Length: 328
Image 1 (cartoon, rainbow, N blue to C red):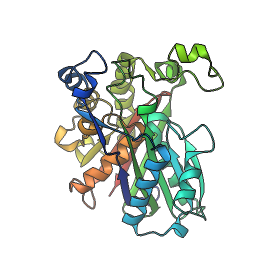
Image 2 (image 1 turned 60 degrees about the vertical axis):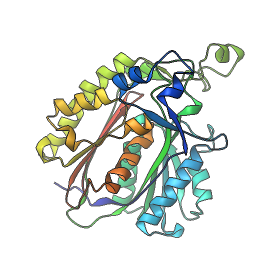
Image 3 (image 1 turned 45 degrees about the horizontal axis):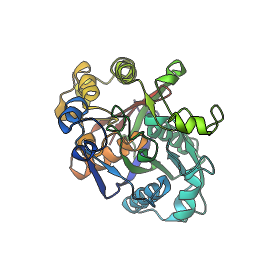
């Protein structure tokens, strides 16, 4: 069952202190607390301060993960930051994090796979350790969505929040660690969730600013359909490949996008909600940060014990998706 033995040896997360409640959004757009909770399950989300950027959140989460794993800066070989809200287009946020944490031996890069980003980064890190290139890798998901959502669009601004989560990966003891990671992409759905302007396709101009093309655009209905069909098939394929039944899953940690999506996935997989970790009511959708933040809170709440089978599932823009099965 175990094609290698790479495991999580440390975790950390960071959330900005400012809380934006649904009642606050009622003053910005035509919405209500009841409407948001009924359709998304979100009550509140965290928002960065004026002076915080993705690297600041990532540094705090990374430092916590290093402390948790009891590793010092000279032991980190690689830093991967998954983000679609970097400090700037270049240099990579990971290089900024590497410098701020004093990881002088490490090489560093960003990856962008939207809300699946943490799982894509996890897969890359696993392979670097498996092939012997690295011994210790720091993987961080960090997002500052409050800077790229349209605060005039009630359909999207209610969904997202800011935060960062991190893990330290090393070789694990035999019989534990990552069992499998499966990833997928479908670029035919690229238009369903995007930030149109600011890249090489639509350069920044008076027109792109006036047309609000520098903010997230989303087709919610199609994203829901994708998440509750393609993603469920992907999870089933990952479990079948390892001859693991859904009944053997001790905890499912899904990307925290929408409670309706999470409940639908759990129902289709016949996993009781008692075995599904949910914290989007407090933080909203933090994209690549949502799974590592949820993992940290699940550990804090003693929802995970040694020997448990944990399943991560992420899905998002691209379209992208990923599933990871881990024996803790």
